[in-house]
Length: 112
Length: 111
Image 1 (cartoon, chains in turn purple, orange):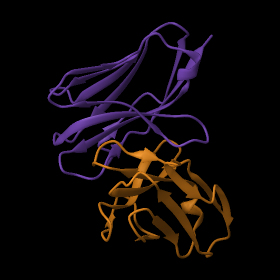
Image 2: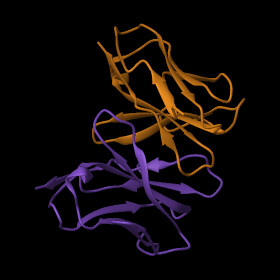
Image 3: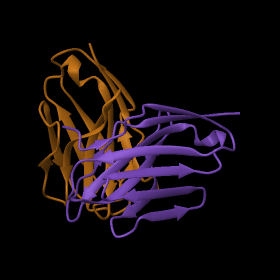
C-alpha cells in the first residue's frame, strides 16, 4: 500500500506562471519530506526538503509547504521555466529510518 | 568526483538468465540503495544497506539478491530473470538517511 501519493500524474503550465504540485501521505510517523526532480534518461536529483517542525521551506524559485494535520505537502515553482519540465517525485521518511518512500511522480510540462 | 556510477546502462536478458548490476559511489557515503522505477509506480525500494556489512529488504525484494562488497560498492543480482523484472534500476547512496544521491540508471529488458 503506497504511503506517499501524488494524485496528479501530469501538469501543464505556461512559462512564467506558478506550478503547484501536490503530495499526500498516510503514515503519521513521517517527519521529513523531500522533492526530487528527474529528467529523462537521468537519475533523480534532490530539489528541496522540509522537516516536520516547519511548515514552509524556500529555496529560490522553489517553496515547499507542509500541512501536518492534513498530511499534505505541496511544491510551488514560481516562475516556471522551460527547464523545469521534468518528473517530480515526493518522498518521505521517519526519524532514524534509512529508507525513503516515494510517490508515483508528477510530470510537469512548461509551455513557452 | 563521479558521484554514483552504474553499469551497464542497458541490458537485454532472456527469461531465466542471470546478471549482476553494479553500483559504486565515491562520496564516502554509509548507506546505499537499489530501486526500480516502473510507469505509474514511482521508485520502489528493492534492497538497501545502511552501512558496510549490512543489507536489508525493501518493499519489493523477491527475485533479487544484493552484496555490499565494501563501502563503495553495492551490487544487485537477478538469479533467474523474469519479464516482470523489466524496469529501470537506480542505485543511490546517502551520508545520512535523508538526502539520497542517485546514479543514472540501468534500463533492463527481459524477454
